[in-house]
Figure 1 (tube, rainbow, N blue to C red):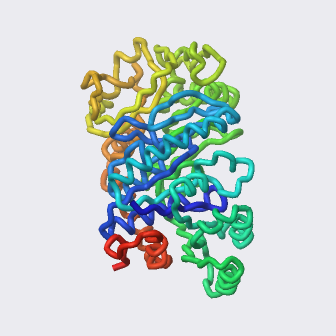
Figure 2: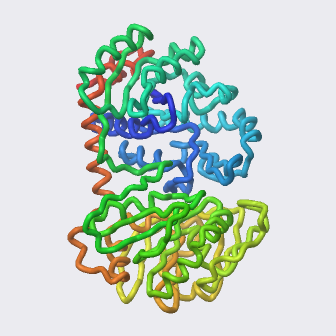
Figure 3: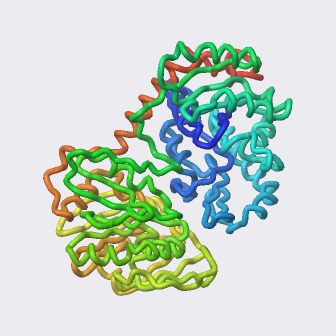
Length: 506
């Protein structure tokens, strides 16, 4: 297997998107390619068919590569639950919560999991496109590094360095990053890619010539700023939503530990929906629907919600006939109480919920990770949908006797099938579910709009799966046009002796 690693001068330099674009370029050229990220830190995750949990970016890259997502694509996933600690997920399964200092020592063990996944992928794929994390020049994290050069040195692979010119200081980022690497690591850098350029490329050319002369390394391309590229974001929440003639307003309170905000990406695409994230100091008043999102620390986020005065606004919203949806952690908040006797998320063992539905939730060590299909019945209408579960809680109580969904597990693993899931309030104003990806299909979105009294919008509905494919093909075209793909193929082929094993641009 041939391996190429994409590292960045900073976080959000464009590594995830570039790897996705290269995956699609190579698979379109007929190569068996797979994505890989040794270590990821993100609250947005996805469930694989083999019952593992990986970063959302690797799930998107798997779609780009046209392969089934598997936990080996992201062997180490860190999900922050405090400012200094995170849940550590190894080979798709949560093993414990660790403080940063403890995890730093654990990396000597984690590298073995990384190399095991690398080897399994080497047996199944011809090319591995690897995404680094943050920057390789973070001096304080160099010891036992598994996310950037530590991995690259362990598997002896070439590296391409990408920088975001839109931030400013792109030449300082590239030259400075290179200068902070060891001699062997510098030799591993085979070229630069500049991302998010806007303007006249001729004004940049003198700087590119200087960069190549200064470093002795080629510039492999300058990617343009793609203003309207809409792909699953792993970390940053896109707060702007440009809708001019929306028929419905949906507000989502922006919680500190909000997870899987990609649940709302399909809603942002719909021309009939104005989806807004409500921040500190803003009001939830004026919404047709309020959605309480998933959370990695539901107790802390529930406290935050109450401190903002949003509980009173939610109660007022319901009194005025508004609708409310809770997803995963947001679902748990709707009940009477949340218990955490094993300190899964914090040292708080019990907190009162919003008390809007008659059930309680107990957080447990065992995490539910499943892909499911489901039937939703709402307001006298029915539709089919798909989604996935990622949660550490069990909810019980009378409210669950009126389920929203009937679900069927893709991989039963000794689970009963056709299980009731979620709930609908007696007055029909509140619905709740543990399922993420709830809006990925147009049909359940339309049913929710019907529930809100907004009908006749089916023809305008956008299918996010089709939209994602269009965006990936567009991204691949941009990579083909603006990157020196012949040079990138040569870099991938370094160390390969026989011409028959080499990749070709033809």
